[in-house]
Image (cartoon, rainbow, N blue to C red; front, side, top):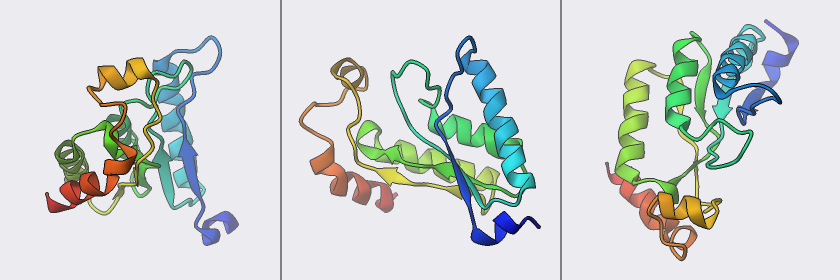
Length: 146
């Protein structure tokens, strides 16, 4: 086992689209990075949720987590923050429950509360510009109840 593994290091992947590349290239790069991470004995591989940001391909975080988990065997894969105000809590609970069923003991759910979106993106998510951060506790309790 690698000397690095003893320190329980993890990787946070923002899924950046390299100049001249595509989202498909990024997803292949993320799989390669996750497989290298696993070979080096790292503990976790997290993906971050970002929406409507040019050059970042991690908007569908749960889908990418499933893709990475399906291409690795022992690595814990999860979210470096699903922004709960962006999603119905039940949907997140169902998505991550399904991922945990498919990849037992290997899925991590990190939650966040940052609104983190521009007005157009918030509207596309059907979010109220004044809701979100202050409602995080109620969203979290809704998620935990499912």
